[in-house]
Length: 249
Image 1 (spheres, rainbow, N blue to C red):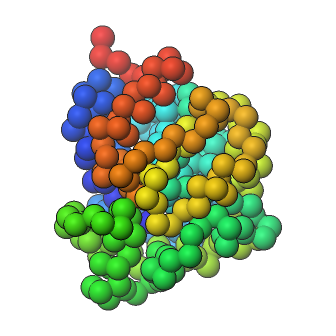
Image 2: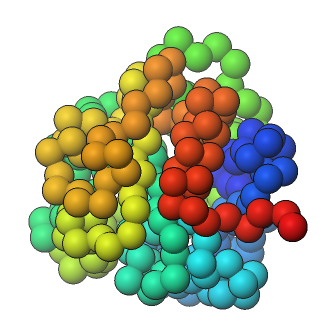
């Protein structure tokens, strides 16, 4: 939420990115993407899922392994019934939630800055408070581009997303992971400030890779940025295990 494809630079500019065709997209209203013409529809889990499916088809990547961070993971779960050729799904910073009623209280850890991700207008102080939740508590160097990404994000994207998290406003993600047929990898930073790992661990996930959540030490909500070597190694192991990837010939 309020980030962009730039958060995946440590993946794109690595052995992972050199070995496999890798695509990082900016959601509508985020990064360099246009603001939504119909924000009430687009800035919701179903609306974002439409965008992901459309981009995957347009780039001939429907049979990819899809990786989603935080909001991105929720979007992938929402889109999963249409990503029928996907070889696998990876989510991190994403607690699957029920749709009626939304199970937010147990899925997320209590944090005063969590609400900022659903607040349309943010001050510079708000932006800094929000971006620090992405990392482990002792993280000293906050990437400047993440603050820029928050400021570039259409404020309606945050406000409308929060308003759309209502009973029936999206598919039941607990049912989705419980009935998933393709491999699912769940990554979790051990110093995560926003997402409750104990909640995720109790969910039925029959296709969970290696039968367990993949924890990364010294990482918070953004392990792909904080601990890229470990994160990338997990992705490569997952890709190798499900025997898929656009490898150079």
